[in-house]
Length: 426
Image (tube, rainbow, N blue to C red; front, side, top):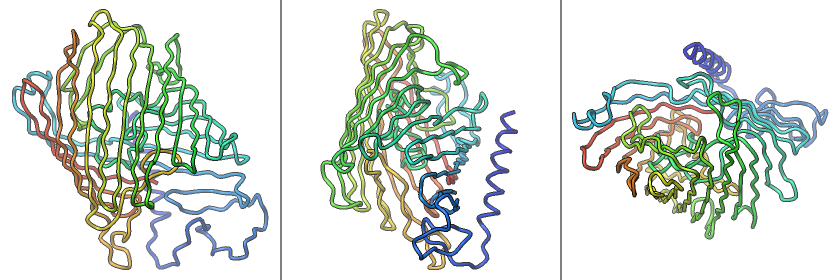
């Protein structure tokens, strides 16, 4: 069934590629201009309700008066991994580390705005071992009292962690850093966000529940409350800024049980550290985040700590952090989403094989991550990673990623992974 779903996604993708990828000479449409018609220079339309199609990092459909706006999009990530691990590592984790390939993501979504203020999105991932996976599935309203504000109900990311809130399409490495396991990610409930100071300060909170195994229902008395405050205290233009943020999350643990485990920064991997299941009532998680963009150079880091209320393990405190730098050899810079407190799509200066002979954008990156799951009676292990990356952006929607991951499992041994990803999103 999973293979059938992937074939469906690939069929839709290839059909769109044939339709949109015809390389016969034609004028390039201006951004926001219908792809099937020349630019409208009159400033008016035949009808306010006339629907026009155009390309802007994805296929979009808008009415002339912008009362109704829709977008059809998706992403496809195909990964390959080669491992070099010692016998000691394989003995401890309980299984061989296998070389291979996989679809890390194969998503489609439909999103839109109706009557200018009502928003919705339905996104599903077909690259999942248990079948179709819910991602962003919500209904909401925007610009309520404050321009740029949103009130959403449904499944969405809770406001915690800069790297978690940055889309996987735009993160610098193939996988997020080790402490990301503490970030709640997507949960269902109420999500509220509002920008202030012309978007330089963003506040957000959510009241949510963790989904049941089938993802379509949420039951029980467990409620999670999360809040984040982030902003840009300094900006010298879109390629020079400093970001600061802090998050807090309170979680009532389902069935009064907790378990914390993590892989190295490789999706095709067994988990190297694992506390196992233990009884616990609730957890409090805090995170601080910072980033700076200085032209083609950037630096980013986060620290997260999880405080558990658990008599069984004597209230342990588990923690981790990462720090990374990146540099564009071709002069681009990381793009920041003002008003949302996260990073966005890189704007490539010269697309690969464009008429001006572009080579795309090239980025080098280096990260150190650390995760400590040992405290009091919790004995999950300590893992540290060094990840080196090379990213080749053929154009703003396509990139090839190369990652080398050196994983050091404390008191055991080391492992090396070589990974590559071919990615397209629209």
